[in-house]
Length: 415
Ligand SMILES: [Cu+2]
Image 1 (spheres, protein in one colour):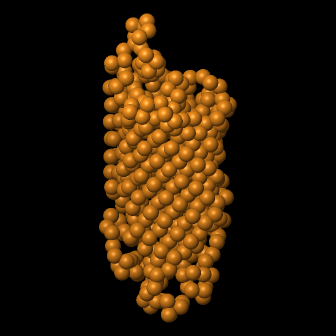
Image 2 (cartoon, protein in one colour):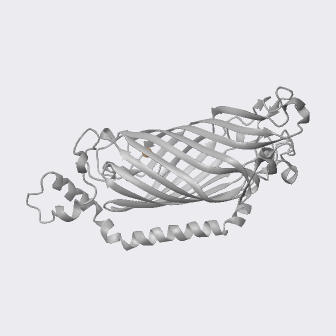
Image 3 (spheres, rainbow, N blue to C red):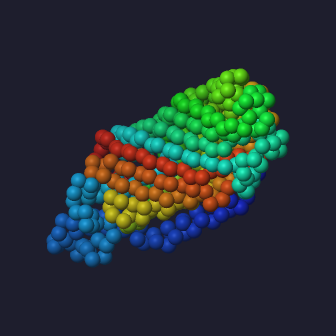
């Protein structure tokens, strides 16, 4: 399945990502002494905050209480219950907000999360070069009647997780998409001549594809975790809607590929995640794929997507972490074509102008509030992007989520 997609993986983007990931893992191994004492030091810190004048010869406030204490904020309403040892009481218990499938829950535990994503794209790009709107018209036999100029993609995701056992968690993630694209009509514009040279905006919103799956934590120690995500998506997003906006009411046309709400296919979405915890920080890496299993009923299949991320999260306080991430993403072009989308009129109708490679940096903050409410936010921006054909370039992505876990056994397990 999808072996033809592997042809580009050796490209420099992935080499860079792999090298960085390897460095993160090597750094993690170098610090394994610190990591193995993770639980012990958490307990020491709890003792410390209780006074540290009791018996234990292991109690060493001076060395273990240096970076993650409650600090100047004291034990106000913000501060989580520090007596709950383990990673669940620390702000970096989840991966940065732009990632999914990075943690499991204890048996019988539920988690609810609302996550919002906003991705903004402005200006056309040919390969690695940004081009002015005027240069986009007529490029490579497309954009004959109009060119996209910017796009905003919003997703509202409800993420529900349930711990079937301590190592297997099931999840479902229904999502609502809201897609807006601005365009400029070419001069002339034969379908509706008075509109030549004018801008227009199309909008499409509705349920996207439903993602379901199970995660299996196949390794867990005091200081690290490996998690496999068996995910797939169900084609609940509509790919057959039409709009009359571009022609000012003259023609009813189907939305182009990037304005459709789903992939139209069942997709296999496997991922593997590794996380390692230290006293006051954590690192992780994740590889994920999104692979359609068939052609949609509209005659095409979306391109496979592969992503590789590595991140570092630093605990400024027990309840506050800052994260830094690097993400390599590769997306293939579409296969087949929807015959309802004339390819000469606009580049968003071209199945061979969908793929590309991106290298992105991410900066995030995780705030763990009292009661286990976690606020997780991240901004991602590309530092390199190479797009097939002509496409809108990625400017930034923003993620923010609220999550909270309920129920389950009150045992010490890391989230
Ligand atoms: Cu969860």
